Image (cartoon, rainbow, N blue to C red):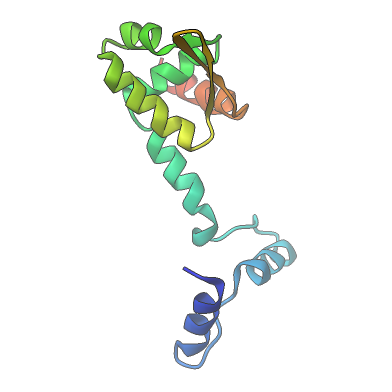
Length: 127
């Protein structure tokens, strides 16, 4: 939603103004609350939904230990190459991985260092 539309919606609701993101952040700091609001977490929620799949979590775990090809990841995860490629594409779209072509092979590696922290939480709780 465009910023202008958000402001108009905030003004039009019963004549009261809702706190805008920057204003909400300032108010949170002054009240001792952590900064943020539900709209601010949209991108985070989308990327966490992308991770929320057993095959993708295993791929993240593997890629945190080194770089792998699609075929290597597919074999370890027990899925066809085309399915592994689709999982990787979705996670690459969130900025989690980079890929590098070497001849006929494409290698994937972690681009987002925070994945290590997320994986540590998952492993500590579920493995």
